[in-house]
Length: 369
Figure 1 (cartoon, rainbow, N blue to C red):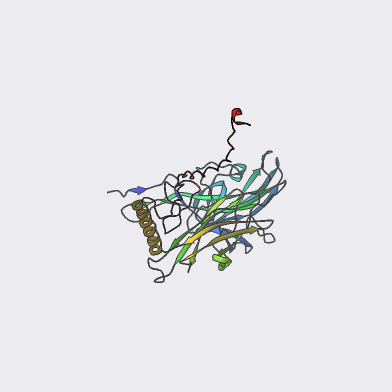
Figure 2 (cartoon, rainbow, N blue to C red):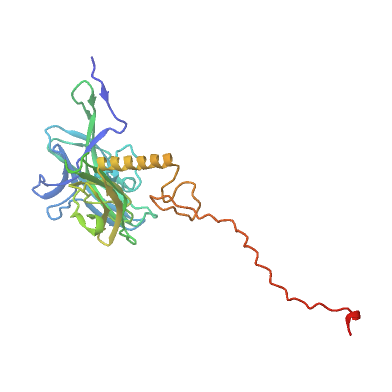
């Protein structure tokens, strides 16, 4: 019965791109990307050893160089040699390159080795020339990539279901295109999540701070990040330099990172600030946090729900701002307010009539003497 294999769309590649110091067969000191079976490094003489391809060119010009492949095994090895664009991995910001099947846009599209298929004899080396043509409209600044030697054989794994693996090694290319350079770094999407014990004081509280580093400029940066947390009244809870950051952040790349905070406060309210800096650039971003244990939160919610139930049962009476109260009128709490009712006016008793002045009785004309 044949063993089934699980092969992903882009076959898993083990790119070993960290520089290692090796002794070349000619006793000259060279730097190489190595996986133990073969290595790839810039062509060098005894007087000129290079860790990477560090190139510079203006738009519309061509650069010519050579790459050396060394076979460290006792059998000949056949490789596919191609140029690829580089990027930062989202997980940890590591240096990675595109596969041969992916579309290349910069260094991977501009560089061309003289041979795409190379066979290296046992314990031998082969040097291959390549050209790098910079387009007229190339963006100024830094562009990164690699020359990759891919062993197209698929190594079979063990077990009932195996994962096919192809191995590749690449020599890094750092190209700077002439023109204005702008270093710029941004800190984005700062978040904090707490992990606290149910009962305050019965365990250790931790928090996880996540954020995104974004190179918004056109040069490769060596970022540094400082974390600072402040509680109520400006108390400093945490202040340290972070180490889980990429050594190099390529232009235009975003990396999502996280930082644990052991011993985070269990009951506090404050801010977390991340300050990222590199040569020629500096920026900060903050977020607020409320540390509240689950038990305390449950009690607060229960009290709020109980108060709401009492309010509904009383029909809004007895509260400063009760439903149905007229705007602008505040009822004192906890006493019921007395409304001042206007009393109807009572008519005043009539004043006594003023006595009239008595008049003298007039006599008739006939009564006169």
